[in-house]
Image 1 (spheres, rainbow, N blue to C red):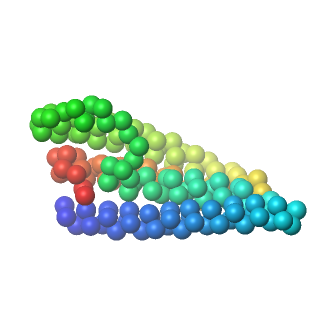
Image 2 (image 1 turned 30 degrees about the vertical axis):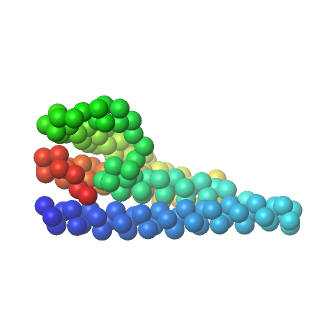
Image 3 (image 1 turned 90 degrees about the vertical axis):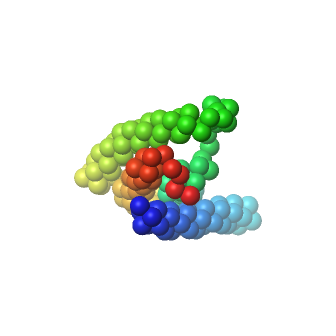
Length: 161
């Protein structure tokens, strides 16, 4: 099981590094485009679309890491008030099972949408890049969340940190 944790850590760290690059590129591109519009009265018509897709890809690629480290946005009113370790473990197991089931459903629909986009060759409006490239990140993100929670549940609710 330690091999599973090491593999997940390496994949998640790789995805976080890619997400960081996407965020930096998106910020730089937005600033450059804004400065060009302000001072040169012209901009790049494709910049806003690319920034949007970079931020969305960053979001979905960083989800497995955030899920593994419990750094995602969540409401912990129930968990923070539980003092009994057995009850806390049961709540975390229930949370893991629930998340796993939802992610399986989301992954199924993400795959269906990606296949549909691939078959119909839907492209972005300005960049004219196949949208399946951007939606494949959704599939990757959901699939890795499933792997993270499957490993947590196999370990009996023990965290993967």
